Length: 212
Image (tube, helix red, strand yellow):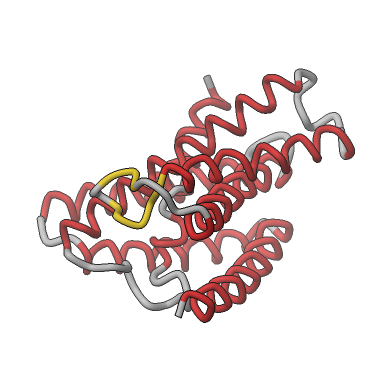
């Protein structure tokens, strides 16, 4: 069961990441249409998941702000798609690291909000993007990466932290709704919100950081 779930998760991740990279690099109308589709799917899943009218409204407003922030990060930053891709990659690696470490090591549970999440998963969620960040900084140094390696690692840890908190927040609402997944659109992942739960919190915060 776990083996099949992992295969489905990997395959759907490859497809989703490949599509995302294509639209991110293309930019312009391609990227706008892409995030609009994702926004509508996310709003639909959130609307079905939440029963409280106030939560529905606040969640929809937040999703619109989040996706608009992702648009601004991609289209209006000086580094073009480089910065956006960096943020996205950290979120993805955080999710993968948490999943792998949580499944292999398991150990004590993190919280009742999300019974499958463990302390080992949290550690893996920080470790994998950090390792990838060190490799990039050491062997693929470019002018786009900040001069300070310590600053670069702090940014990775911060983004990873926000991503994991976002994951827990969506897990809380899933638990309140007594559902396992926000949808069934992605094999091995459930709904779209299950896949981008951390990202929708990261993008607005990263955009605020860039303009402050």
